[in-house]
Amino acid sequence: MSTFHGYCRSLTMLQVLILACGAGCNKPAPGPKRADHKAAHTPRYHPHVDRSASSAPAAPVETDSDVDGLAISAGMEFPAAGSGRPILFVNGQALTVQEVLEPIIEDLKQKAASYDLPAYRNHALREVRNQIDFQISMIVIYEEAKAKFSEERMQEAFDKEADRMVKDVMNRRFGGVHARYEAHLKTFDLTMEDTKARAKRQAMVMQFLHDRFRPMITEPTRRELVRYYENNADEFTTPAKAEMFLIEVPLAAELGKPVTEATAAERAAACERARAHLSRALEELASGVEFEAIAKKYCRGVRGRTGGAWGEISPGSLTGRWAKAAEVLFTLGAGQTSEIIETEDALLVVRCGQCTAARTEPFEQAQEQIISRLMDSDFNRRRDAYVQELRGKATIEKYPEFLQAVLAAVPPPAAARAAGPE
Image (tube, rainbow, N blue to C red):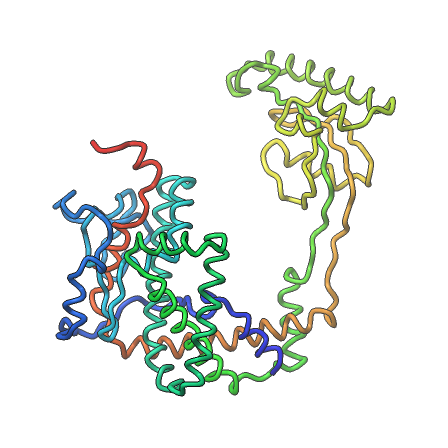
């Protein structure tokens, strides 16, 4: 079982617990009548949004389906600020908007700045749902785990593991600067103590799942290993690679306008000029001049200033006017240069640098990897079924409304910021 044990030691938080489970529960339940209910109305449990900004009904987010009763249709905007229910109770335990957003905020900010609006909507919805489901799973499993690990010795061990996990996050996300991490948490009305408590809960859950399912998992037979190897040959094959150096003359550069706007005669003339230009480049290459110098002199494409170097590529990895160049590249040997290649919108010359042939890892070498994957799969299957069972028994209140509140608090997409208020 050493392979499986090594796997469990190295599991990341998301690998252990992000589950493709259904959100919410169909059990009707009244609101909690306890101190938690009062806590739900404090500022901590509300996103930092202006709730007076809009009294209109929430506008749903674009995706391809409804989300547990939350109407979602293509072309709609993010929910309005202040919409939804800013707290979710899972078996009476509170989950807040801030606790959902904090672990994924950097990713959302990055995608908000770089993705177009439809792509960002779908990405935000997916990440938010994954994080909510992760937190729900943490809560329902923790309720089982805490009873098992009540000993003081175990609690001390989990405290140490939680400190390590928090330090790892601080190093990875904030350059190891404690003050930066604290300032970040403060913007979510969270403290370092909150974070350590969350990390300790994660550590307990991970150990609980490991201890629960480890005895049930056995190493696969050789027949199972062979079957997996034969059915998943691409996982053990490294594609061929070759360094590509390119001199290109886009026809648009010769025409001074897009190719689609040129007449047939104009295009033919541009092709002749480009061909003559590249013929001179080939003559200089034949005389012994270095390819890098020729590319800098003659290339009118995107890599001319770097000597036409594209680095290593694999077959089929390029598109557009470069696809043909990549195809020709893999017909050349190391150090060979092609003739002039003509495409619909460019003429090119390609040189092959170092080559690496395709390689398939032998079965005997792949066995340990296959064992790990099959045992991981068995672990994940058992874990998912177990969590699904726990969630089926849980009381999860108003999931769609809470999802709406989290989506209302995600970073606004760049398109929305650029447009500004109407």
